[in-house]
Image (cartoon, rainbow, N blue to C red):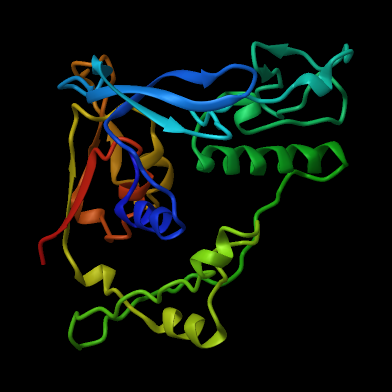
Length: 277
């Protein structure tokens, strides 16, 4: 199951029972669902991480259920476009202009997964900025939506003290029994004192040394690491792995600041960050 340990622990705290090593075979029930029939699953991927489950149909299990939610993917809901003649679609995505993301309806823009299909949230945010600039031009502006929130520092001096880093402030959350009885935001946000503590907490990124290791056989060429890395530490290689993808490589670990954004963004857990100094 591709989830980080903290996410699994949070789910279990809310009473979610994770039943792994089983594969769904069929829904049970006559006019209403009564359960799910499962078969034993010994592995889900082959040695190069292609999805190829190994099942034993003779080993079965049943889960009783009043409701079954199929959460195996996402498809845009485009029925509201029925009868529209100006907004075209291809399959399950909306057709837009490549440069301005405008649909066939003048002044109507679209972006994100409903245009590209499933991609990263970073890609959706980038399209949001692209559409915002196009909308600004459409309304008579110059398309410049950039902001300068602070002047860049000309010189950064490292203080002469220990590199011991303080731990990150833990995000306050609803209690598990509160989270399961409402649709309120689970993460409550930091207090003013916690925000001040976080802003003063220094990881000494410029004085610490990290090594970035990419497993080329696990990489699916999704590009998430390239999108989130502000140090431009990743680049595409000229070779293909056994799965037919052209994996990324870390151009230089010297550029890594240890932010771990690439580690958490990688859906295939193909990246490791190791502190070497």
